[in-house]
Image: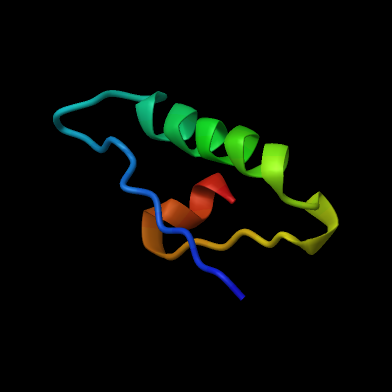
Length: 51
Protein backbone atom coordinates (compact mmCIF):
# COMPACT_ATOMS: atom_id res chain seq x y z
CA UNK A 1 0.00 0.00 0.00
CA UNK A 2 1.27 3.43 -0.88
CA UNK A 3 0.36 6.81 0.52
CA UNK A 4 0.37 10.18 -1.20
CA UNK A 5 -0.02 13.36 0.78
CA UNK A 6 -0.48 16.57 -1.16
CA UNK A 7 0.57 19.98 0.07
CA UNK A 8 -2.23 21.92 -1.54
CA UNK A 9 -2.39 25.70 -1.62
CA UNK A 10 -4.18 27.16 1.39
CA UNK A 11 -5.56 30.47 2.58
CA UNK A 12 -4.67 33.18 3.28
CA UNK A 13 -2.00 33.04 0.57
CA UNK A 14 -4.38 31.47 -1.96
CA UNK A 15 -8.10 31.80 -2.48
CA UNK A 16 -10.77 29.26 -3.36
CA UNK A 17 -10.69 27.15 -5.51
CA UNK A 18 -6.86 26.80 -5.45
CA UNK A 19 -6.84 23.86 -3.00
CA UNK A 20 -9.61 22.08 -4.90
CA UNK A 21 -7.73 22.55 -8.17
CA UNK A 22 -4.59 21.07 -6.59
CA UNK A 23 -6.52 18.02 -5.39
CA UNK A 24 -8.11 17.56 -8.81
CA UNK A 25 -4.75 17.75 -10.61
CA UNK A 26 -3.34 15.17 -8.19
CA UNK A 27 -6.27 12.82 -8.87
CA UNK A 28 -6.02 13.26 -12.64
CA UNK A 29 -2.32 12.40 -12.58
CA UNK A 30 -2.86 9.45 -10.24
CA UNK A 31 -5.49 7.77 -12.44
CA UNK A 32 -3.14 7.93 -15.42
CA UNK A 33 -0.86 5.36 -13.81
CA UNK A 34 -3.06 3.47 -11.32
CA UNK A 35 -6.22 1.35 -11.45
CA UNK A 36 -9.06 3.53 -10.15
CA UNK A 37 -10.74 0.43 -8.70
CA UNK A 38 -7.79 0.09 -6.32
CA UNK A 39 -7.59 3.71 -5.16
CA UNK A 40 -9.11 5.33 -2.09
CA UNK A 41 -9.22 8.94 -0.96
CA UNK A 42 -9.50 10.30 2.52
CA UNK A 43 -8.87 13.54 4.28
CA UNK A 44 -8.88 14.98 7.75
CA UNK A 45 -10.06 18.31 9.03
CA UNK A 46 -10.82 20.75 6.20
CA UNK A 47 -9.00 18.49 3.70
CA UNK A 48 -11.78 15.92 4.06
CA UNK A 49 -14.10 18.30 2.23
CA UNK A 50 -12.27 17.57 -1.03
CA UNK A 51 -12.71 13.80 -0.80
